Image (cartoon, rainbow, N blue to C red; front, side, top):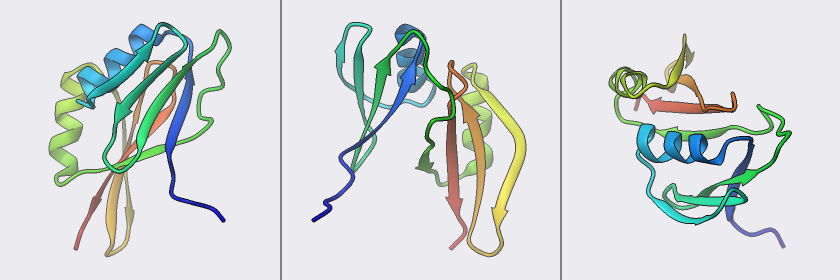
Length: 115
């Protein structure tokens, strides 16, 4: 019936800025780019893709990346120019998470599992 997740994608206005964010700020390997229409990144077991549009709707999805040290990653991506929300969320006893925004305002969450 339903298989594994193949990929997740965001609509973006500025493909160059979006590719730079995911490649240079988040350090995801760029697998493929088709001009301003499409780009795919290696995000582990699935692919993260960007779909070009002149009128995307920011926040139309959220991708969550697992990290080992949330505090360190927040400092690193902020140093690379990312907008990092100040609030750190917590699922008591399970995980801590924070949100980073890509150039189109799409949320990208970082999660650190505590156990």
